[in-house]
Image 1 (spheres, chains in turn purple, red):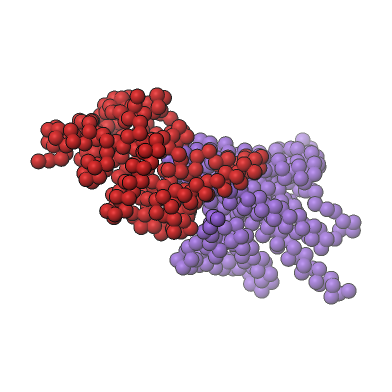
Image 2 (cartoon, chains in turn blue, brown):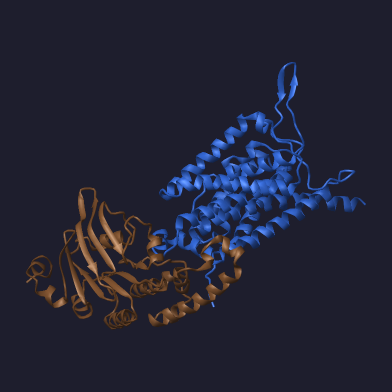
Amino acid sequence: MIGTAIDTGILTNVAYFASFAIVYSVLAIGFNLQWGYTGLFNAGIGGFFLIGAYTAAIITTPYDPPTVLGGVVIVPGHWGGLSLPFVVGAILAMVFSGLAAALIAIPTLRLRADYLAIATLAFAEIIRRVTINFDTFTGGTNGITRIPRLASFEPPDPFASGMVLLGVGAVVLLAVFLFMNFTVESPWGRILRAIREDEVATMALGKNTLLSKIQSFALGGAIMGLAGALFIETKPYLDPQDFSPALATFPIWVMVIVGGAANNRGVIVGAFLIYGMEYVSVLLKDYVPSNTIYYVRLMIIGALLIILIIYRPQGLLPERRRVLK
Amino acid sequence: MAILEVQDVEKSFGGIRAVDRCSLTVEPQSITGLIGPNGAGKSTLFNIIAGLYRPDGGEIRFANQRIDGLPPYTMVQLGLTKTWQIPHELKKLTVLENLVLAAKGHHGDRLTNLFLRPLAVREDEKRFRKQAQNVLAMTQLGPLAQEEAASLSGGQKKLLELARALMTEPALVLLDEPVAGVNPILASSLMDLIEQLRQQGRTFFLIEHDMNVVMKRCDTVIVMHQGRKIAQGPPEAVRKDPVVIDSYLGG
């Protein structure tokens, strides 16, 4: 009995680790569509991730009114509280993140490429600040609690919960992976790769490149929203700090660059590898001070990135050449 | 009835007047040459006609329809395609992909069709791959079909430019120096191909510096100088035109 208890403990840990890595894989696949395939540099991944997570949380959580004590609001609560199923939350998360991406893409994609990076960087920061400060809506720094789990067990069973989460995560990742491969390996996806190589030439070959760019960016944003919906299931409560650039934008770039831009298999490998370093650092926390391990991890990632860019700029699994029969 | 009419077109960049009230016409099923010294505004004029630059003034008609101000992809849909002086090959796409991409009216170009009309997408893809293979054979690029476009030589990239343009089923092709950098034997067979395509009904309007090619292959030659047309006529007449000799051909 003791033996199995230890085993499920480790397995539960691994399940949660893998679930986080799956969330980042989905985020990275969204960014890969935008940047790896279309050449659109999104510097505000965290913003679209946040919109998805908060949309899903507000839709799936129960009613949460503000807690008032002697006329003072102690806990702000948050809007929504519709108690709807996860699937509804996930779909609306995709819709809202996709719409946000389209709204940013429509004006900025007419301009030179750099403006998209500037606009998305600013957007993500604004949306995060608004989330922190507009606390009657979002719960502010208190975050959103009482997120319903995908399945609840009585008595609570962390192992079973972890397995359900991992199972749902794996299904979502597989669906996203297959859907994306179908879309990017299509004639439409070929236009995206052509835009990445030379947009003016693509336009001069009769393609409405602006439309394709907006579609690619919005679809990528929607996938990031889906990652957000999945993310809330992995967390005890939703915290706006989880969406800072350092946690939700920069690591995604590294995952895609390390794994291999324009190769979704590579991107998943990159996500597990980079997030895996975080997991290892958590395992080591009993032996090394957590501050030290945090900085050592960043140094290792930095060194890995430099080595890779010098010796293997195409990433671990590079883009394939398409042989058309 | 001219297939292309350019009327008083103007374009300035800063203080430089690249195209200065230029007017010219191109007859259908002709091979029309556009010559002139460097900086005469030839490539700029091509870019304006193809919709890549918006003219400051003037009108352009293609097959009796006003086209100035329309976006470049619309020009291609109407039947007007341009190639580049400096090849714009899509580097990481294969030669075959470069061609299939250019196919006109592919159902799969629309994102929604991938899900709503998958059969039409698959049929188009099959048909256009076959068509692309034929065009590659015509342009002697067949053996390179599965190579990345980046790996082609300079001359081969020029062939790719023409091949890609042909995939768009154009009525009028604007060729910006189609044989510059192509070896003489290949250049000659390329011009034979253009002649053959003209006989099938297409019109070619080309910029070229090689006077042998221009004099031998073109029905009409237009000479530009300082942004304006200074002569238009059959090669023999243009060659003897004193204004042309003075400003371009020399003594």
